Length: 326
Image 1 (spheres, rainbow, N blue to C red):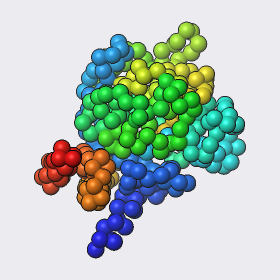
Image 2 (image 1 turned 90 degrees about the vertical axis):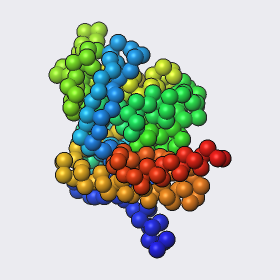
Image 3 (image 1 turned 135 degrees about the horizontal axis):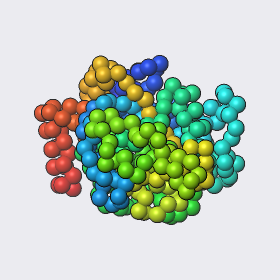
Image 4 (image 1 turned 30 degrees about the vertical axis):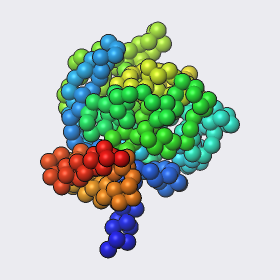
């Protein structure tokens, strides 16, 4: 029975839309297969925006369930795209600081990032989807891991001097288990960037402004999220917004992306239940191994899928008690 449980935790949670696997463990290394892992973000409400900048007006948003890549798109994945489509190499492709297989691809324009996601049967995430995945089940984290800046949880401010592997900083994952939502590389999202959009955004599944801000009369701009290895700490908070022209890679050494995918309402309901159950099992296994951080991450995912589940709530309380007693 124990071997079956461990096997279940090691397997993908589900197959959706052409056998896309959902990641089942927060610390899975990005092998050629797991590099493509996605995370289910269940339907829910969160606080979008912050009080830091005028273009980040706080407002409540409800999103239907969706999938988002667990990792930033790596050089390995982008190379496969180039080989299959004949797409040209991005800027800095041969830069030895940035070209390792497990590092995120950089120097990619919005146009090429969007083309890559379509090639994988996905799309770029909306700003709202990106921000919910970064803020976690609680829906209001300042950083993916909580509310306090921590150099050990993100790659920023030239502290390292280059990008790091897409599975780096496991202690800095969001509450949903998504890696490097702060630092490493800025990430393209689907939306046009408009400074005033947060003040007029719809509350349900916002898709972004109809047209982008024409920055310096150089053409409309698309939104970027997440900060980078070059950027200062002020760009790391989960609501921070930045922008660039869609065919411009002028922030090339720190400019990458990840993909997302829509799921229909019925599949979302079924997958949410299954994801909650699998996350609950992961929490139990982590508790048995006395890995309380992993256990708390997993039980948070379970509760995000089924907030009223008494068993999940009791397990969360046990983990908290175990952490407190250490």
